[in-house]
Image 1: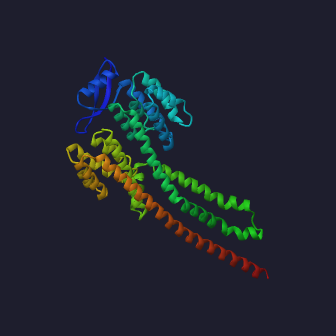
Image 2: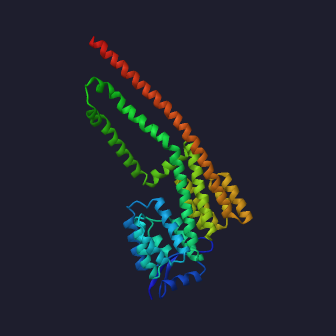
Image 3: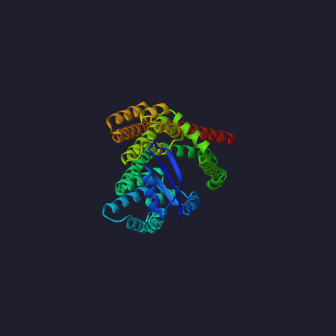
Length: 390
């Protein structure tokens, strides 16, 4: 009989891995569930090696944008709610324009689903396309027979994440513009005397003075992006962001909003609390906070309540701990986490708006001082030149 490799969790949330012999994939999955395990993944040993190859092949390509992922899950939810089978929905998504690599994934998924595979397994193969959080939600939907609902919740979650990012972009737009024009002024204005006097042409100045700065900026940006792929560098950078006054508070609020929102969605889907907490920790987008929450979540396997685990972890605001404890006492943990997410999203939005105004005013003053200094220097050199010529 063929052998199958599986990953699962037991009732205490511990990871269980192993091999099982069965006639086919369905029989293997049924045997694992009969043991009282929460099935995460099951594949033939041959398919497991192919999965690793596919993950490696796609790991060097950029992940689809959040807008694309939200559209994918929103359309999937609509099709399944309309009565389409999973294979039909995947085939239709594969024909959709604008989904990029997700369209190719959907076409391949339609073929494999008709052969007996489950969508969550196929998504888990493509870590370059789907976060573990999304895989877990779809898997929970498959276990409960409500994939359409889980796909809709996944789309809702992604759209909330998008809105948080848009708020940050809107709040920092004007400061970014001021910084850009300030840098341009500092680089270009000192050369105005040479242009006015005819000693240099604009093209020569652009080539000799401006282009080197642009090349250096592009090189520095590329180096920074590459360094942030190193775990240690990423950890230090995230720690620095948390340490910056005002901006650090905003980063922590946004991280807590992501954690609470994902935990609410995962727990309401029926996922064990230990697994939901671990996946939600990965969604915070900040390495120091992720490690603290994951370390605290390990206590859940020993029977510790989530509120106590978060309190012991450190780094988690007392409001989150208190609301978690309230949710545990009332049996409405997912509702309590949803309220926490709403609160921190509102707080982050307010802080970003205030910070944006302060930065804008401060940078305008700095730009004014810099330009005034350059203008004064220009006119002093100009009159010195006239006096020298006389």
